[in-house]
Length: 473
Image 1: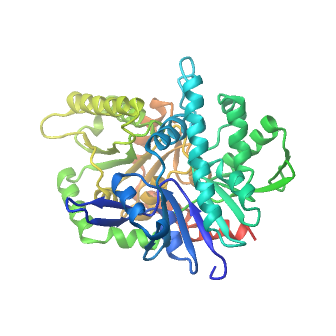
Image 2 (image 1 turned 60 degrees about the horizontal axis):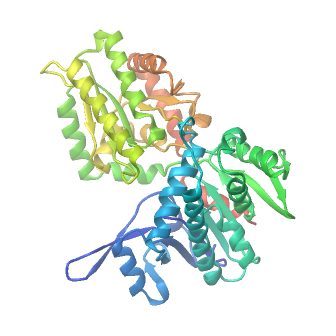
Image 3 (image 1 turned 120 degrees about the vertical axis):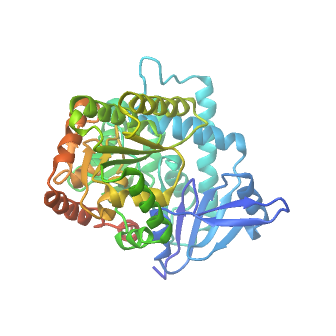
């Protein structure tokens, strides 16, 4: 990649800043697949992102020409989007509308409701996307490759193509894609704009074939675009977009190396002391509506009610890290998770055995420790673009971990052969799947884990990103 400039556009960037009382800035590098993928590239890299805090805004204003040099990444341009515009674009449109549509989360008798306020929110989303397109157009060298990320920036490909028809553009959707009948919940003009925005790209990537085909269906049925399903191309307004499937995996070597660090081994020892020789069911999620934590806990309660032989012999370790607390639906959901967890402990705990440990503080080393100790990993989302928990768990499992997996996770397309599959809405089926997983012989668990880990690490972030750039030619 040394000859070609690569630009990445995403809402969240690879670094964040904090501001000391004396005005000094300190920089913290983020994690995630995209950061590690870019670290493997040579050449001219520029990452364009939004400022997410006052400290980020201060750093952007102090930077020469708005660009920061980040070791191991390259240059970063942080866009100082006006606070009101950012809030409406990010919270009201991206997270409260597009996320809800693609994850099919709406309580449709009551929501969505698109009115004059929604139109003002949408104008902010347009302005937010235009700010990214302007920055990319300004900074891109002739013939650059631009990788636009996710549902926050669906309008950028077409806006950038209008400004810089010489650059090559790929857009990747990390979320699922809604089928046409659900996608039509969006107002006609907004739904069309989102589709046409992505179709400004030369290549549109998705986590699974299921989501790619849903996108093709929307292009055909809603836009009336010319869709070639065999070639996976969409021709619209004279432009051809190729649609690709790139199922993001985990970097097994890097993940195992991190899990061998002293902070992880210390937490593993503390967890083992807390749980004792009991079997361990683990789940690790943000308290995101799509993750289905409440039904997962209800399934565990039903397991204990129907199979009292597990009393005192199993512990459920549930990591439920708070998410998006500026949205009321998320605050209510977090409270619901805490309520049912307390009910389970009150109903079944006996003073010598606490059947449930709920962890609400984000503790990445403890999550890695839990993967290593888990006998069963529960991943039961209502709908998920991929779900890397399902891949991280088998990769780090030490003794063989049975995976109970929702058939609505993107990971199901690759992992259904060795996971115990469940309908995420069927609490009783999930309870029986947990029972079956606990009873699975150790040698079978070990063999399944080995195959699941091979799938999980087949397309690590470096290859996942490189494949998308290669698709641009």
